[in-house]
Image (tube, rainbow, N blue to C red; front, side, top):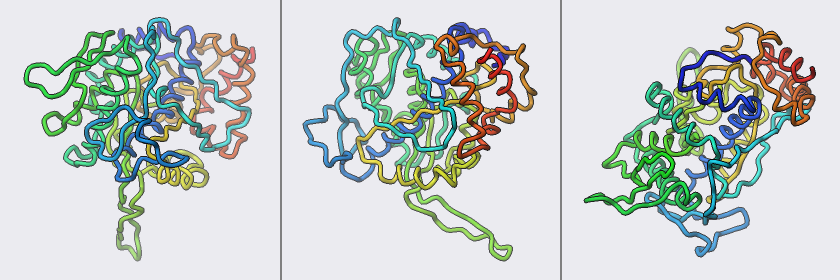
Length: 389
């Protein structure tokens, strides 16, 4: 991989990843994709449907927490980690690459308690997120229509679940709830690591929904994308005249996000689009995944948490990459082996040949265009040569 110059603050991150560049990059994309699915589950909590799990209705005594804005249910119990030490916790490592890349849903169940992992990079990541919010506020946070009550309700619920229910329960060594101050109605959550305090619940009648999204992105090292079922307008031309009608009322549309680490896309361009259009640049999505993805979102039971892991290789160390990776890489030109700035993490694990084969497999799976989409023509030869040397 090729390393670009970074600002002084971003150097903090670069110094950290020097021990595992490929590992962290795989983790970044894996968690980004994982979270983009998981956070969608939270939106089902505000729907009018009853809390039904895969095997049937959830008994009421299985739930411990509830949040404002949720009219239909409470949340699954969260397992506490009373002795958790974030300073010594290693980042999760994913190695999902296979000899042949076949585009599939690839979903698996996720324990709700494991929704938001913490590790020793937490403080550095929070500093980086503050920097990005100051420099790119219109990119890292977005909302389609701040006056829409459904969108505000979804943000309120996600906010309260994360800050009031999840964090102080799961990580009591890092977060704690404090009583409301003065005339305030909301309890306060204190971040023991950074010293920051925030309202533990969000009332968008008195506080901006955008501010709620900003706080979400400043208290956890996670990106959230909120999708809601809508009848998205569809248009077409007939005899030179433009026609339009409402589509499926269950199309899931991106209505709000707090996304600090986009991997090769500008989240502003996805805002207000349904899943089908969000993924329109992805080769093979329409033919191989669109119908399954739409059905998955439509049938997903309330309280069901799912995850998916993917992988890619990026051409720099920047976690904030709001550009098309293939086009951006092509502007740089083909990377030569001697230009690589990559360590031996994958090779030390004995996975060098596996990753090299997986890179070749991008061209030989059920979606060969994925090789070009991921920028393979720019970096593949150099990376494979390094991995096999």
